[in-house]
Amino acid sequence: MRQPGLILPEQGRILRARQAREAGDSGRDPEQICLDLIKFAATGIWPTDQPIVLAGKFRLRCAVEPLVSVLRNAPEYSIVWQAAVALASIGSRCATRPLLGVLRTATSDVAKQAAAYVLRYLADARATTTLCRIVARREEAASVRAEAAEALGSAPRRRAQTVEVILNAAMDESPEVRLFAANCLGVWRLTQAIPTLTSLLDDDTVVGSYGSVSDEARAALSSIAERNRRP
Image 1 (tube, rainbow, N blue to C red):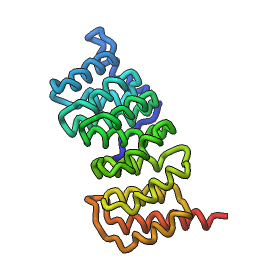
Image 2 (image 1 turned 90 degrees about the vertical axis):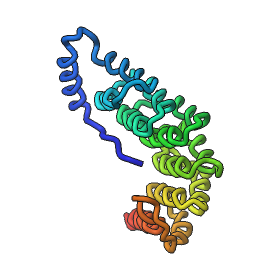
Image 3 (image 1 turned 90 degrees about the horizontal axis):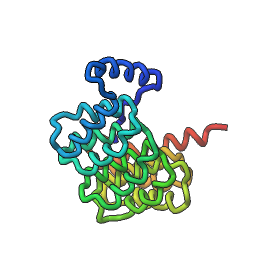
């Protein structure tokens, strides 16, 4: 639910050149240095998230596998989320399958939430079915279900079943799930969601720093109205 720091390709080339100069004295490939450090982070030995940040900054596709391992296994909350931000910045869909594996089998709710976060930025149709199952599964943590609902907002194809899952989630007992389901409906700008969103206008439950459910529903309705006004 946080925005990763994405960089432009030209910036990436400049940063890679700078990194190569900085690592030149060691005689080693700077990308390999970064990968080695990420492997340390995956074991919990490395005391800083700097190599993970660098992997995202330089968009190292070869770092995807170790980053997913960090996301799944790292014991520290901050390290898990740094790995998620790096994966989102890299933007490689070769991460989709291993991230779906995290959603299906990980025991950590933080890891599952982080995996859903990355999948939102990958916008890979292969993730839709699993994300729908996560949203609909009441035994999952509300934070994981809410993140999956938000991720579905970027789904490249919306099937009737996907829409139904989000419409149901908008009436969920968890305010966090309701808020991010409303967010998803606003991103989709679905006219058929107007009755559901209207029913949330009296829901003043506040979800952390994200505001109230009613505010999110109001924003979604405004987005739908704007689309309907267009010729």
